[in-house]
Structures are given as C-alpha cells and as structure tokens.
Length: 271
Image (cartoon, rainbow, N blue to C red; front, side, top):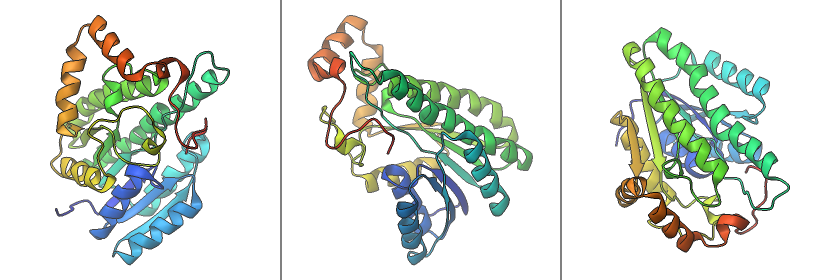
C-alpha cells in the first residue's frame, strides 16, 4: 500500500496504535511530527523511523497542558509548513469504580485527553488546512462510543462525543477540500488493552490494525469501524432495546461494571 501523505502529525505516538501508525508511515518515507509525554519512547521511535527511511521530529508534551500543547502544535505547523495528514490519536481509558474517591479526578483527566485535546488538535490544524484548501484530519474514537460500556462511563462518553464532533466537522470542512475521517477501533492488542481482564472479542494485533487504518485513510473513508465482525455486532447492539442490552452487559461484565476494570499494573494515571 502506497502513501500519498508526506507530512504527518500524530498525537499519542509513543505507544500502541499511534506508535505503529508512525512507524508504518515512516517506512514509506514520510516526514512525521510525533507528540507524546514519554521522551525515551519517542526518541527510540524516531531512531527506528529514521533507520527505516523516514524522518521524525519529536514533541515532548502533555496534551492536557493546554498552553504547552498549543505551543507544541504551533511549532510543528511552523516547522512543517503545513500538514497533509493530522491524526488525533491520544487517549486513555481511565478506571472508575463505585464507591470511588478518585472518580472525579479520573473523569476530568479522561475528558481533557480524549475529548478536549483531541478536538483542539483537529481545530488547530483545520484553520491552516482550510486556508490551504488541502489536508486530511483523522480522529481516533472507539467502538465504546456506540453505547455506554459498563465500567467505562468516562471513556464511552468522551468517545461518543468525539464521534459526533467528527461528523459535524466533516460537513463544515468539506466545502474547502479538507477531508475528515472517524476511525473506530475495536479491541487492538496494545499496552492499554493488555491491562484488561474483560472479554475482548476479535482482538487484533496492532500491526494489522495499523494497516486497516492507513488503508481507510488513503481511501478517504468518512468513518471506519473494525474489525468487520465487531462492526456488525455493534450495529445490532446499538439497535437492541435497553432491557436486552442491560442483560447482556451484566452477564458479560458482571461485578466489574461496579468495581471498575482491573488488570495488570493498572493505575489511575494516563500512560
């Protein structure tokens, strides 16, 4: 699969889907600006990309620190001269449990990263793309945005909000020749999902997920839910009456709907 995007900006690039996308785009010779909090991970990734034939610039920044985040994006825009592709990928699941002393803190962190930082990323670069009448904006939402997932109130809410935002943004930018794509992954094997002990049907390896995402972007898909089995299942779940959904969710998640998702080395700080 070829790549027509030569200058690319990605948030949440140090791990998981973001890291794999960055590396795979880098192998095609693209020039990337990669933003995340972990300097060591980004430095290693940039080195790997350069060895593979790409170019990578790293931006060490917490996307929830608004002044620093806006400054970092401004620097990237200035250095690049304008992006062909921007991917708002940074996100965090959080862990909420009942009763829970940290739920409000977790809620605020999830909202700040999954929704506020994501929409700020897209709005920041949208103004330049509209002026240039060129570019492609991508938001990584989730299957969790289709219905409220047990034990993931904050995560589901922010992803649902992002799905609605991306749909509205698509209509606003279409007259200017700027494309918007909503990527809705199912379960992908990453450090974040490694912490889960809940059922994860159709779990996909991250390199395969990256291929599917890049293909959907290259085809300028408006929205892309994967794997296909999960897409079919979700359409059924979305149409299901509440009593049926509640029954199935209770059987699947059990007490974790109250106690919160637990897993290996999980903490209440974004990774």
